[in-house]
Length: 275
Image (cartoon, rainbow, N blue to C red; front, side, top):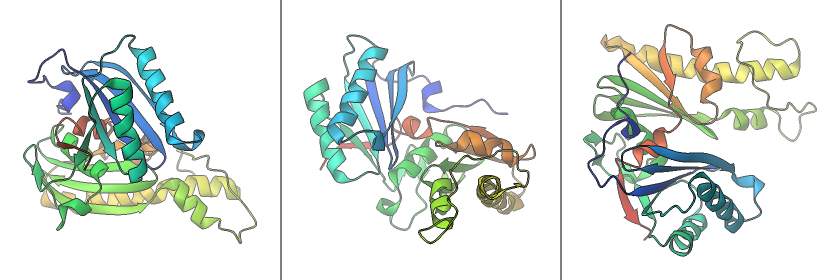
């Protein structure tokens, strides 16, 4: 397997004394990572947004965790990827100024970045988290890569060399579970996913084994379609459900989990102050 050349594995060309705090704000979770310009990670963690009563409490928890990870930390850059509501972006902007004394920079999707061209007809319609994952994946392989983000939705993006070819979007496991057992259903199944791939012998087990296989079927079909060009293709999985899906893909699919793809992409994207 080729050596990974993700942004955090490569030597930076900027001042090594700079400390960056990075945020990946999704619909469900907020991930953070603190690192030096060299790529050395000083701390990382995540918060489930629903566990906090408001944005202020969420960001206060992140600040406490960052300060615990590296006491007397002086943050010089705050980089943000967010697909959340704009109110949280404004809260992060104020938090950056008040707590860290920096102006937050927010990643945006552009027609090209780091030598990679976007595959959407309208670049700004592509989710910024998908774009960042694609940018990071471009540093992990020179060949064909299928980038799978397994979160609230499952997104599958195709990267051929330095060309993003577009992708696919389906509901994530929990959304599919909620859809399957709606308001009229008598049986409610708690999400407790099974990675054995074996048939379930009760309703709960059948659902928890079946839904992951649906996602795996999509990924394998994309791999099969792309492999028709004769080139080897790799699958990079990221997101909360990535470790669950990895063993289900099987040994014939070259795949690995890269949990920080979106954060890695922040080092390669166009970063701008909040408009």
